[in-house]
Amino acid sequence: MTVKLYKRDPYMFEFEATVTATDGDWVALDVSAFYPGGGGQGKDTGTVQGLPVHDLRAKDDILWHLIPGSPLQPGTRVWCSVDWERRYQLMRAHTAEHMLFSALQRQRPEMELVKISLEEGQKQLIVRGDLDWDLLLTVQDEVNQAVRENLSVLRSCLHRDDLDPEEVRVKMERIEGDEISVVEVGQDRVACSGIHVMETGEIEAFLIIRMASAGKDGTAIEFLVGEEATATALALANHALQAAEALGSRVEDLPRSARNAKERSESQRRALKQYARQVLAALPLEEVGDIKVRSGVLPMADRAELSEAAESIRSNGEVAVLLSVDDGISVVLAAPEDSSLDCKRLLQESLTPLGGRGGGKQCFSQGGVSRCDCAREILQSIMDGIRLS
Ligand SMILES: [Zn+2]
Image (cartoon, rainbow, N blue to C red; front, side):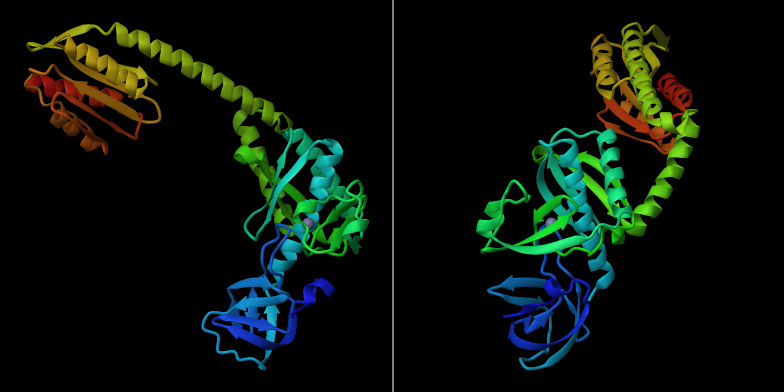
């Protein structure tokens, strides 16, 4: 059996132990402060006698430490060290996660906790229930208020039969054994075997940084704690000020201004597409030598629409030179089947000097450039090519 030091003292990160058994690269110790993960909180990392611990596995009351290439033998005394900065961040995040969900449930009692994931790079919980940014701001304020109040985080042990699901948040189906560890912060009591800080003030600051769909599971809420939360909040404030300046709006009005700008841009886009369709349907006919050509530069036409129009023009025995300007320039050059015009070569010759590319068949070629400022130049070059063919 391994004595779990993290249960007695979550703040212990260095300890001495004796190797009790080995199994390949797995090493068992008589005592260990390494947390093997659980309750959504990631496994600890660190070293045993200076050797990095790659993984942890708890089995039959024994905690196994994966140490690839380990020379350790049973009976050896070892000095062990848990990566404290990482562990402390996860402890703070775990307590904060309890406070966040509790605040969410106070606001929306029907809220359901689906999954918790607390790792060094990403701390998030997935919930099922209606969420919006105003609600998240309210619960973020509540969590930070509880951080300022520096509430005690209490841990107690209850027998399964003494546990009242009305008073303790618990998923009975996930509980193993009769002894249940309960973590209490303010009014919130949760069955949880994870590692927590002793006082909420240790969290220092709490910031929600993302709300995104988690598919059928619900919605993910990602957050930060401590100095990472403070530094990110300050950086986000600066980004918001810059965005407000760019939109000519007050920072408080940013969400509304950004939504309006997006709607405006979408409606202009729709109007331009409509216009492009009309222009495509009425391109004038030009005679270049004995070749009949319909050409045009259109704003924001789909490549598919361009191709469709080009097909229809070439099926009438005419050449189509169609360009669309959007994020870049798309070009379609098409000629009737029996034409001697080499569309592919002509398109490549026009686009290559501008850093673009083209391909396709001799009678139907498509391509483009990533710039937006050379549509007339491309059109001119293709028309010159047709004239010389
Ligand atoms: Zn927990």
